[in-house]
Image (cartoon, rainbow, N blue to C red; front, side, top):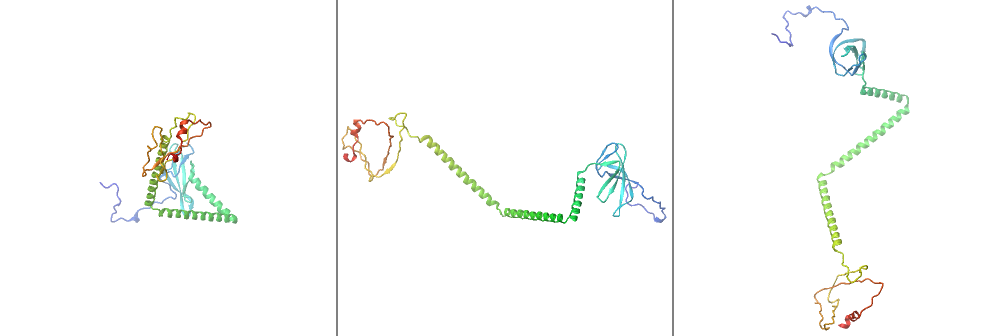
Length: 287
């Protein structure tokens, strides 16, 4: 059994191709081909949608008398998949597309419409510039300004890239770590100060004297002064049961602590007692 798909045929030694009879070919004959729908279309008879890429068994023929720059234009015949209505379209080499002729209409395509509109606007602008020289000058001025702005923006981008290229990541990380350390130290100092202030508010209130009334408070100013024995004389204490010889003197090497109290002035003077007048005497006289 011979092969089903062979590439070479057997030619006998006495084969003469000139003896083969040639049949006359009729011009513009149709022949069947397999193709896909070139665009989205809709049948005019039944309204069936035929999408781009759907495969059909079509007939192809040459369009007589229509060429574009020496290229032949072809026509294709297909049938609707629902009502079997014949649909024809032909090639459009000028626009690189296909043109529907009968049996169907092309669906809306935004890209194709936008391209067509852009071409129309460009042709209109070129015609206007050709007729109006002032419009041409305005367009050139606008284009030059846009070009200068684009150049400046490009230079700014280059400078920014150069600045970022000079940065050292290691230095940036070290700087960031140093800032975090300083912030932690400052935060700790603030917390310590707040704790000390809270301790002062809780334990730093002076006790009120018991001999004053409840409605009046005595302002007590305490001053702690380190004094030497050479500057201040030692104060003597006197009691009525002892003699003046039993005085205790401070040692010379020690430091004295003096507490000054400032009593508040009352509006009503109190009468002095006899004992207080006897106890108030001058230290110089006693010495």
